[in-house]
Length: 163
Image 1: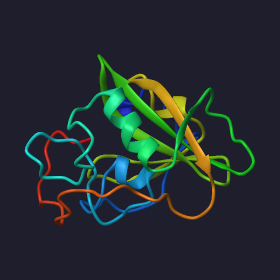
Image 2 (image 1 turned 30 degrees about the vertical axis):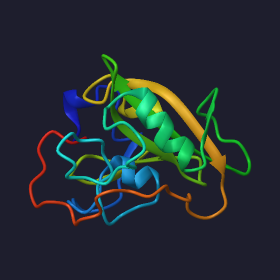
Image 3 (image 1 turned 90 degrees about the horizontal axis):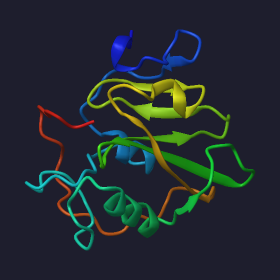
Image 4 (image 1 turned 135 degrees about the vertical axis):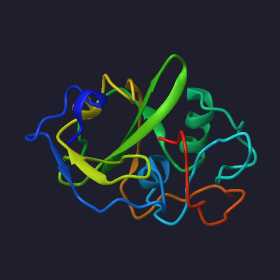
């Protein structure tokens, strides 16, 4: 199912949980949003806080998650009362995000493809998305309070190069 793009993925540590959809991406999914893409593209096609630099850097994504009520933390292990998000990247660019579920499993949206559950962040690392470069947490009380996002159009029908 996932092949060389995810060298640590096996049938035992990855489970599809949805059909493919163009409605949202991994960053949106990590922030409990399922009706738009959240990504810092230079063409401003996708939602992003106007006060945060539109760049695929850890600094920009750290600001997004901080504005959404998260703080950096030291590990990806479940902590009672907290939700966690792992950011993946390589060569200085953020490429993916995954969210820790209350069950202790992790969940990801794979680009414009499916949602999956995976046993741990490593299950989808080392390939297309790189490695976990940062983990954030917030008190697990409802959805995060997102900063204003601009623009907020429906996602375009064809998205190329968005993880």
